[in-house]
Image 1 (cartoon, rainbow over the protein chains, first blue to last red):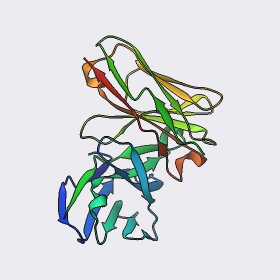
Image 2 (cartoon, chains in turn cyan, purple):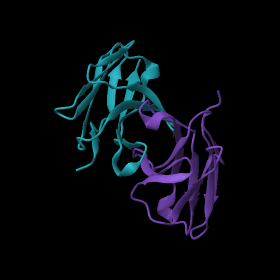
Image 3 (cartoon, chains in turn green, red):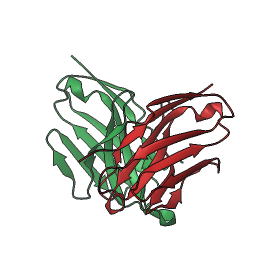
Length: 113
Length: 113
């Protein structure tokens, strides 16, 4: 079982749609959780951190359920500029590292006019 | 505040050769991690450096090695290049052990022929 699993996608949605991405992680010791966005042939960029209490940033809402080891990202009123690959990421502090990032494979989102 | 910079941006090498990739971390960041991203995959953790010491390593063979310098910049060295080493190599830096996310450089795209 992969450490971080995401919906394979791709998601093709019209502008204005609401889209939800799901992610599960296998290591219950994971301590920090993030969503990153990666545009084609570019580096990943931090979209938002994810907290157990849930957090919102404009049109984006992230949720974490530690009991189910489940993370979600909701995008409301999607824009053409939201088209990208969304990476679910957890941080593990195993093995003495200062926290290495474990990425899911990513889910590609295409928003169409 | 300067971000994470990597050099070179693109590189073509022949199988069996050796390569050195360079990374300057974001100002104030003392932790540097390296990731390999093959086409269509999420980034995979190679290793991490914290205060000039290797501080965590992913599932990569010993021919992948690195250094971190007193100014927190870092190098990734790969010996005996194989065709499967062709990928985007990403450097990421962080402070506070990564709890607040990592900042990525734009990567070095390595092609092994």
